Length: 246
Image (cartoon, rainbow, N blue to C red; front, side, top):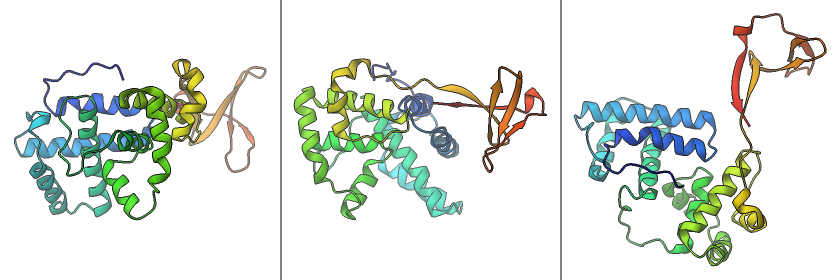
């Protein structure tokens, strides 16, 4: 959150810091890879249109509409188009949060309470567009979150500090596979400054099954996910796949 981002780069130059931000916020590796692929699609389109040197503040709604039409012409499936466009919208929201581009004009400006509620859902992986859509469909009962958001604003003193506290709790919870709500910030408030995510460790796998090293037998064993049996590993060291996990 204190990360410094240069404000004189082309749009493409911000792709790596956007992905790094998602990683720091505890997004799953699969989700980050999916966004990385979407950004590559978007980059190739920018190059095709000869606007690869465009600055973030120069990207307009007409560009997004043209990009959508390009994807449709390429016969990309609707579900994939939604994911590609969501990545672009997430990128713009990231640039807004960093103060690199001004917020997109809205007919009804967000109140401070709405900003906090919306930020909570962003930590859960929702875009602003999805929040609005799910609220209309009653999948999200928006009013249920306004009171804790108001209390959080009073506790922290500003929207920015409320977002910082929410980010810390979200990262801490995600690293432990725990669910969290706005109210979790209150429960963790006494230790908020020392709240840290669980450290990631490299864990060994063989063909998708986890492995353990036996100190007594000085051998690797593969734990079958189907039976739970410990099978002696007969492969080579290079056959072991290491995955970074919490």
